[in-house]
Length: 271
Image (tube, rainbow, N blue to C red; front, side):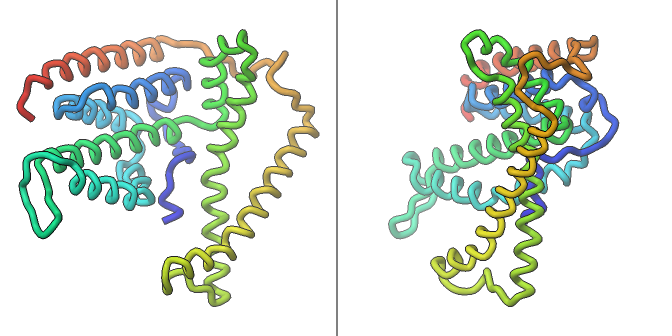
């Protein structure tokens, strides 16, 4: 399951989405996430789903690879669905003992599932098509106006990029530690919840030690290269908006207009 986590990974392939400016992809991702919470009707989810389908096709990243990233969060998704179905009051559909499933609960669970899946997949596309260095440069460029408020924009962007870069590394390290402990006779499956938590200690302790060691090595490497933050630093590859980037921003704007129009119209539908 650890290998199924795709957040923070970069999928190398030649596509139009990979070649876009990272600022455009960041803006488009945030706009897409916000658009999922603007309305609660089927029309909005159909429009957002079609947009996501087109973006996935443009990225040339295999759909199976993106869906694989949903496996680690399936338990959270299932728990959310069950809670919405059981604890949402409304028109009863099915009732047994003290358990009552309502029409509103099923509708809420369905919408939450669709929104959650599109949110995860939509966010994953950004990291799959953008390198950590590009994400750092793009985020720093977008947040540059905050420098006037004494916000350390460069440092914040650098921390986020390092965190994303460390996700697949730590997952791989966790997988190696688990296999090593299993080879030594460790059992992570049997027993009650308390025993399973105690069984995780031989994994968590070496993982924390390894994480701190990697962080210390990274800090020493940055010190040896005389890293002193973003003040006065230049870019090897400065970000410049091209014609394709402007077209992409226009498409994002058109998507938001269509979604808002569809959301308003969808409020008058019975579903």
